[in-house]
Image (cartoon, rainbow, N blue to C red; front, top):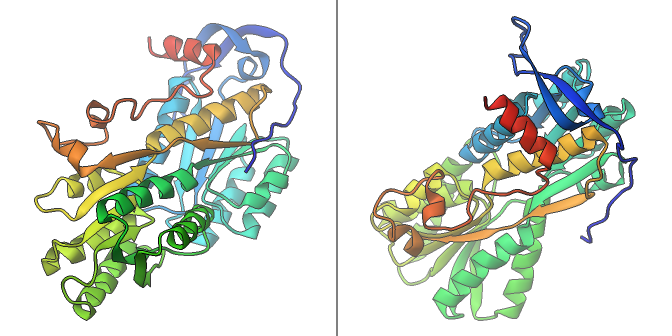
Length: 367
């Protein structure tokens, strides 16, 4: 999608900010106020900027890190950040948004709102004059003024994983495809997969499975186990998993079956994923990913700019990285999300949309 920007009035006057230190949403002793120079008026005039993050999916490490990144970034600037994960429950997701609308938030981050009802929810938010950043959500939100859509670069995630698989298979092999329809990032990844399969006739799909639920990994493990029983050794070369929940289940099934000839190429990463990739004789050889913590951080920065009245792109894709088992093996210590940057330079760090006034707030609240 071609990136477009929508124009908003820029705040020309900057003031000395009097902002409050973070406190729990339940309320407590009046927080100590900080005086910070060079902060936009709309941020400065608020005793404490309040942000609500509502995510539809949950129960996985990726969600936990995304929410942690958002909360950490916001609180580092003196904002109050409340988070909610519906764990895949559509009704709870929409109810959480409705309830949050009754409170005094300055802006919303909506994650994985994939249905038409999300568009209606967001219209209610923007009707109150509140800005929204939506991650991996319904693309129709682009038609709602005041909304910025963010996503992982799903096309590149798929290309990185598929190219690595194709190179290692030397263009020949039979594969299992793990994918589920109905989610914007999955739709984008599938479009790349279809193009890849057309361009590489030596790769043949012989089985596929995909379901998004509270126990996706377990159901995937059972499904792949059945496929391995059906297809004898030598009949399956690799598994392409478009979500790490799929890759986790597939890796367990492959390892339990002793089918070490099958390699797994995935998308997304977490501490659990890295641990599994580093296990002895792990079939999970590579995964393409964006640091979920960075996604949360960047989304908060973009929302803060929107609250401040500063211009923000209507769409933004976060760059993808390919993490390989071979790279992980070069480390003398166990690799996790914290020290991954030691073997993957540049991982976990982004200064996207981090304005000087944000750095000033962080310096003030770090004291």
